Image (tube, rainbow, N blue to C red; front, side, top):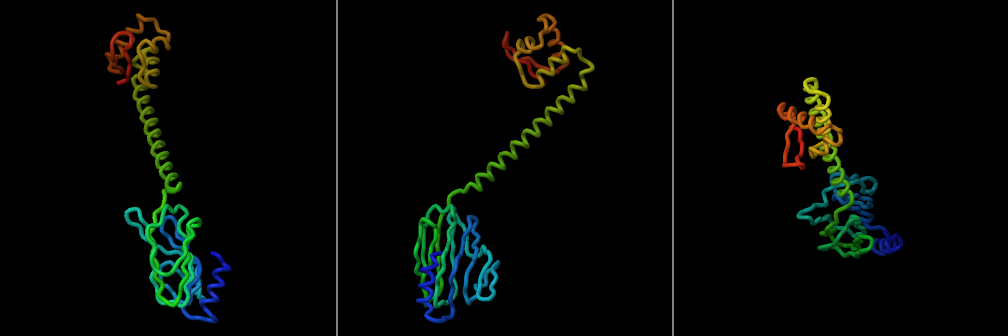
Length: 232
């Protein structure tokens, strides 16, 4: 608040001592919470605000609403001889759509509206829009990371379960067949690449694959040298 101007106008409007005054700051958050740091001799009787020793302070959601992406701040109180309020709009202010009520000055750079008036009822209304803040981007990021973590957890759990199932049948297959299955547990692979990795002779390799197919532990897809081995 421009304290010098405020003080000058306050003295000018008050004269000496005047009843029914209100001056100070109202800060509006991105979520529609209005924080009051206000001096007044009239209690606005809003939920969340405390009135003591002509000081009105606290936080309230009673004055701000949002509909179809447009926020509305509206205050409608009684008569005041002096009205000197600074309304601080959210930092992510995008644009102002409507302003009406008592006399005001707008500082677009700071996103502040100064209400300067008196000898009338306090009514002020502003409609404004905000940009999506990093707060919500971080929230979306957190949700995405959580879902990714859940997917990885379920995938690992599935792999462990699959391994446990194969370990039950390992006693009924020979060592080479077991090596083939262990390679395929990491994912499907071309038939010739599996043989090359394990260094198994071609003749015996075909026999191992035939045995595993009979036991319904793997399938072969495709034709010729590009056949792909996949666990059932």
